[in-house]
Each structure stands twice: as structure tokens, then as C-alpha cells.
Length: 77
Image 1 (tube, helix red, strand yellow):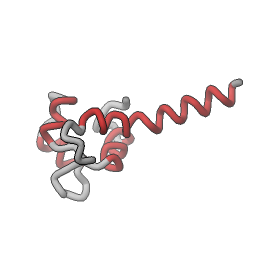
Image 2: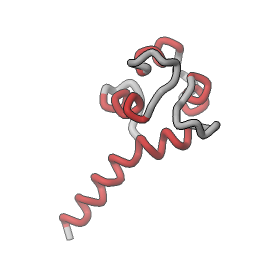
Image 3: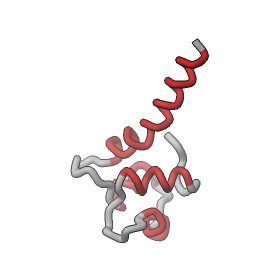
């Protein structure tokens, strides 16, 4: 039973950034823009966005969002 709970918790924790991205991605293009990020996180600045946008393509991927959560730049969940 404990193993099932642990597995479930890990699955939910890993899925949270993907769910968060799809909730932020209001136009459904698979990426998050500065404007979409600011709807979810009103205090996010252009500097915050630039720090998260590690490939500097002007949008945030699920990998970049997960890295931002891991680095403490964005809250988990």
C-alpha cells in the first residue's frame, strides 16, 4: 500500500508542471508567452521570464518551466 501511495505521489508531482503549462498556455500552441506567464504569476517580470527562457526563443517550454520550478524561480504546482 505504501508503495502505491509513493508511486501515485511521484506521478502527480512529475505531472504538475505539465498540467500547469497547459493551464497557462491559453492559446494552445504548446508554449507559454510572457503574457500567459503573467496571467498565472502577476508578479513575474521580463527579467524573470528571461531567466526562465534559457534558449531565448521568446516562449517557455515545459522543460524550461520544470527547470524554473526546480530552481525555485516559480512555485511548484
